Each structure stands twice: as C-alpha cells, then as structure tokens.
Image (tube, rainbow, N blue to C red):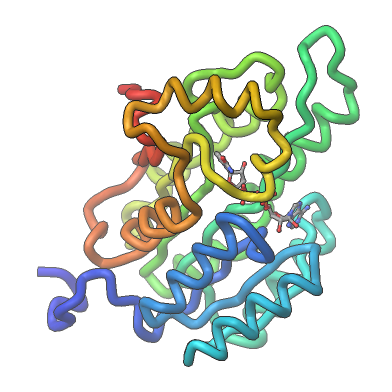
Length: 258
Ligand code: NAI
C-alpha cells in the first residue's frame, strides 16, 4: 500500500510543493500547469520574468497556487539564492523538475568552446547545483521526487549536437547515480527523454529538418508539451513510488532504446 493510499487518483499531488525550472514556456510551462492541475503548489523558475509571471498568473487563474522565482541555472549564485527564496516561501520542495535547457548546435569541427561550456553549464551543471541546494531538506522530509529533463538525443546521439547530447547523456548518468544514493530516503530520481516536441525550442528548425524528423516517428506526429508533462506528473506521483533511476522515453517511438 502506498503512503497516501486513501487517494482515489494516484496522480493526485494535493498539498505537494513543486519547483520547475525553465517554466516560462514550452515543456516547463506545461509541466507546471499539469502539476498544478493535480493539486501541487508551484514554484516556477526561469530567467524570463515576464513570461514566468504570466504562467504563475495562469495557474492562479485556474484555481491553483503558484509563485514566480527568477532563477538562472547557469549561475551558482542565482541557484543558491533562488533555492533559498523558494524554501523561505514554501518551507520545502518535494518535487523538483530540472527542465531548463538550451541548444547551441554546430558540427564538432565548428563548435566553439563557449557553446560547449554554456550548454553543459545550463543543461547539466545547473541541475547538479540546484539538486544539491534542495536535497538536504528533501532527505529530512523523507519523501521526494526529482525528475530531470533529458532528451532522445542523449540516448541516440545527433549530428550537430555533441554538446547537447553530452549534457543530456550526463544528466541520465547523474539521474541513475543519485537514484542509488537517495533511494533509502524515500526519494526517487528519474529522467524523461522527450523526442521531437512542438515548443519554441523546435519552432526554429527548418522545414526540411522537421519533415525528415517526422519520417522517423512511428506514431506519425510531433509530441506536444502536454505529452511530456503527463509523463512528469506520473513520475512525480505516488503511482510511480517504485520507479527510480528510470529514463522514460516520450518520443512517439522515434528511438526504442534499452
Ligand atoms: P524552450 O526553449 O521552449 O524553453 C526553455 C525554457 O528554459 C525557457 O523558458 C527559457 O527561458 C528557460 N531557460 C533557458 N536558459 C535558462 C537558464 N539559464 N536558467 C533558467 N531558465 C532558463 O525549450 P523546451 O522545448 O520547452 O525544452 C525544455 C526542456 O526539454 C529542455 O531541457 C530541452 O532540452 C528538453 N527537450 C526538448 C525537446 C523538444 O523537442 N522541444 C526534446 C527533448 C528534450
């Protein structure tokens, strides 16, 4: 029996406190809205304060609870200050979704060191530092859900994305290692690996690339931000209590890895 077995809806997150990074748009926004719909109180974090405020307002307008926090995951100072501000406001973070991520694509021979560093910093070092900043209270609380936003590219590789693929593969390694470290404390750590999802990040892809990618998707369509958000909600819920160190593909069958 699960700790909250009396709940009829196993995806019920009533009363839980969740923090989502990169929540101003795209997948992060959808995750924040979906967790709020399931009853969680949301700390939404991003560098885009204008859009972030809109997301918080959208959650509140739908009857949920949310507060925006400016948090730049490329900066240790900003991560520590942001984590402190969230803990001061809500007392704890029970569900952490490390979603903020960027691409800076170029072929290996042309890739600039600065673009390697920036992608690794935001996509991998950021989740490391933010998780570290929030883990102690989560351990004390003896309940936690950490969901890291990886990518199909971290599993299958992608020409022109050595930096991005390395960051996402690294995040998967972090996920599995941390899952082993904190399992005995009631904390699960999982990753979601989206495929080709319609968001502002992929809106910049040219028509040809987009059409070529579509031919690789057995389900025959791009994913939506809601497809990904529902997977995150599941991993954050009591229904997923016995799942840890897992990478959940949300890719329409684009890559079927082991
Ligand atoms: P997006 O570009 O639409 O949104 C990313 C959000 O992260 C933006 O709100 C942006 O302001 C924020 N952000 C960027 N740098 C930040 C920083 N330093 N600190 C805090 N926030 C920052 O991207 P999308 O598509 O919603 O992607 C979200 C996550 O999903 C990323 O980690 C991405 O790598 C991953 N993903 C996306 C896929 C897709 O097809 N869209 C596929 C696989 C993974």
